[in-house]
Length: 351
Image 1 (cartoon, rainbow, N blue to C red):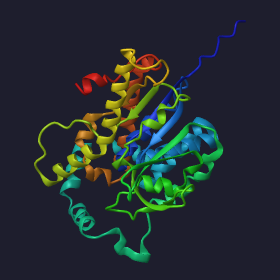
Image 2 (image 1 turned 120 degrees about the vertical axis):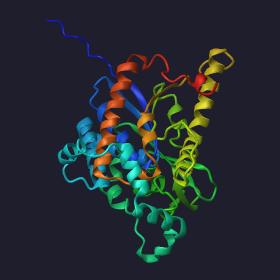
Image 3 (image 1 turned 45 degrees about the vertical axis):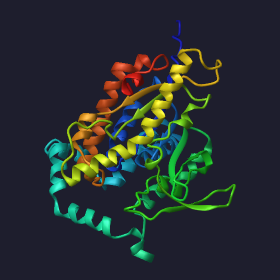
Image 4 (image 1 turned 60 degrees about the vertical axis):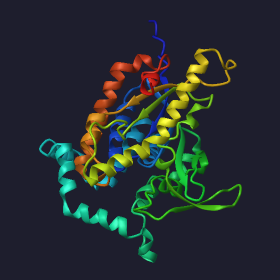
């Protein structure tokens, strides 16, 4: 009996955007990717919610492979939404309002209006000794020390240095609970996280990495990583129409701000690809990166910055399901492209 040769899985890098509760969309994407034996995740670059997803995936994979990664992601988002029974949430989701209606309900809700007013008038430093970062118990539970084993995908976490205004990417043994909290530190809500550079001994405050890299792509360009970079995009690049209400204007400002660094890096990727195609670079001096995206802009355009701050079980389960569907759609259309060609036309994007 002739044994069939084992098919070597296709290796990819993942770039995971931040976006609060919308990060549950990425949960769904990762959940589906982990079920696909012909895909192997070599490296992850994550910011904010993307950092939380990346840490959960790697920590779970170190403990128990793909099944462990799926379980760790379920635990993370169960904690984020206080979901006590995922099956119950999935059942309730069928009878709940659409994401568009949920967004309108939140925009009209007095508690959200009051909360937004408070965050613009009251500093998180006003709480003094009573301040606590609500994400700390969740990140502590992921036990970041397990990430330093060297197994599983390489992991890169983006933060913003408040003093310099520059991006700082942490990797490998540098990733700690405080680093993950810094990557998800929105300054209107949380106090800056102080991190000390082990080389210089300088301690600086850090904010959300989305301001300078959402997520950072450049760590994935190293020669040891595969060509394919799959971006899980949860901030719509385009939004039709002109924002007119205060909420719509602020929402679009946030989306543009948090996409700027990504678009800048994508433009640089396209520039390098053109130089390589025209033989204007020494062979092997630069990497020809293949860009792919998993997104659902129609869904994200139904949502707003308010739903990012509302991790209700119903919303999170809907986002997870949408992520799984979007991942299936991507795999059906572009699995064969992996390792061969980009599925995002950057030239058209910036043309």
